[in-house]
Length: 635
Ligand code: WTA
Image (cartoon, rainbow, N blue to C red; front, side):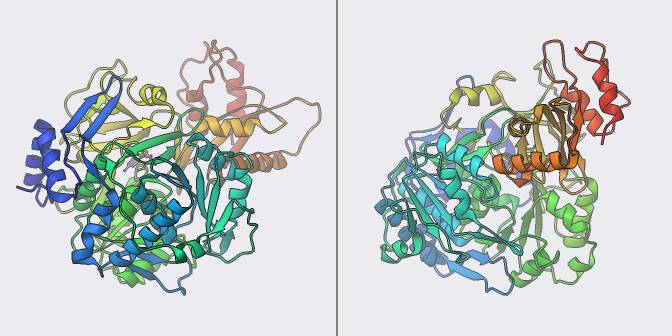
């Protein structure tokens, strides 16, 4: 019996129960029936959350690209695998068939090999949303190289940190990128980054904007001539189930970004299975996820999940506001999109434009709408449901993380009744738990607590690159024998989950996770700054925005505060990227601190939220007098 495609609520409960009672049998059946293996596993699962060590399908051998490409060739060779929609609506869309994708990936893989890349080497991919990005990722997987995609909106410093952390030998980039009416000098950013990256031997450059760029002798090479020379045949490297597939960096609440490592087999099985069910994908549907492949959503649900199902996946280069705010809906009409997956921040920005731009286009092809990346507020949910889905396309509010690899809590459309702002039920195989502050599991319904997962699932990250201890400390130490997500959640009377947000110092701004510590470090680089503290505050489009409290050096001279604010944001842009800029900067004489010198962020958060009615007991602070001063000068 196949449980691969769930079609009724009854069936969901039945399959869910099986996945929890006999997880190994359950996942073995899914893996056996729906994927291509060079060799089957010796053991489905071994795990120990105390180490932590998790292995799925140990002993198996495979190549994920054979599953995402080769096995479709016989039946879907001419079907569009990737549908590329350019930034400029006047530029034609490109349909890349499975056959063409096979050729392009093989050529690219041969180029990587000819440039000295071997199995296990790390390759940094810093490309805009053009077909080369998806092809590059798959080419790495073809030869067993580990890709590390860095979102092409990150600054040169952020790029360098990520390249060095995983010691990438090669960088794949382009001359530049289009973003709405702007162009971005990507290669210039790479050149800057590489001043501090001795590990990089080669840079391959795709042409996109045909700008005049500097090419460093010996190091930099144009990609196209190498591709032209390369063979369209490349045997897939035979990989072990637990070999790393990729590294993807995510912000932590402290210090360096965390290079989450995902391994091949479990990731493949879980992303494919979730894709099929959460989007109810059927043959010949056109599926569009608006994320960037620089984030996990793009890895799992633009590239691997859809392609493993032989789907047609849309890649969009542009932005929702160019040439106007009707662009998304124009694309839905043009390509007759069936499944549309986006982020609440985009929905809020578009809803601000009213419904005329939506009504202009024929959206009748839509069957399922998705949301991901942050809690979706009630207003945005209704706008999406009423104006885009016309109340007939269920919204799947999918909760998951870079670390989880795939969707963890989500409705299944036409199966699970939806409820605004609720991610609803755990996906098959996922065993959530809500925990109280004492570390006890809170049973029953109508409760809230810290969200943990009690049992391994196939696509969980296996470690943090180069720092297993940090992996253990961050995810497996807060609660014994459980994976801690960093999120809070509540469970309603029927067992539906609603994610309430981060409970650590990660702030989600426009769907991007930002740790406060690295931004504070950047702010503190300004010569006039003594110390700073950053908190989030609610923002009607971005979800959250950043509020910085900054102590300046006392030089006796007065300085123009707006200039200082611009300079501080400039430093943040250089160190991290424009996404981390502060919306509000309040200069202050002090920051509230505990007697042990820890900043009391709770108080700063409340002031930024304009919620000062209940600041709690401030008398135990080291410096209670600064609190009133901060309140009086709050922005
Ligand atoms: C948040 C994105 C509420 C959450 C796939 C999580 C969500 C973090 C949702 C991971 C959702 C993601 N509802 N919150 N549907 N989806 N989040 O690693 O706080 O970029 O921990 O992965 O986003 O963000 P990441």
